[in-house]
Image: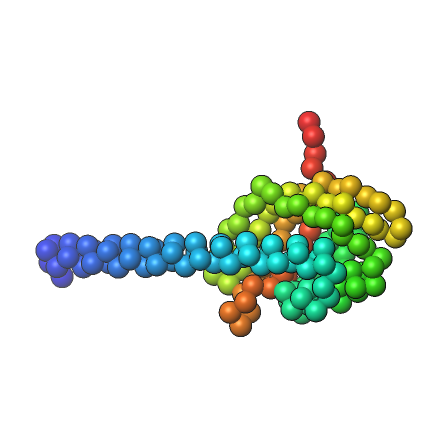
Length: 152
């Protein structure tokens, strides 16, 4: 291959890569919006105590981690909401950050909640990191971990 052919080939490869990246960025923006919508629907379902919707939005092998170190499966977490051992009076989510990589998404936010847990009223402000997985065209929660913010 001579220099001219090599230059043309390189130019075409760079152009194809840029077009591919533009398509990837467009899909990423759509996925980010879809993940944010799933996060919001999960929040609303927790407040409503909607076990059916929580089950639908959760991956079968979900791991739900609480700030106190307790980790629950999908069924264990949904059971606490449905049986009202955990009642979410209100949940506000803010400071969202979402990063998608293929069929996975990492969502971070601040979780500000008023809840009843085992008969005690709690006001919590926690940081949350979630991993969402796209299954059958829908985003489902795979991992959720809460942690207390550290103030310096």
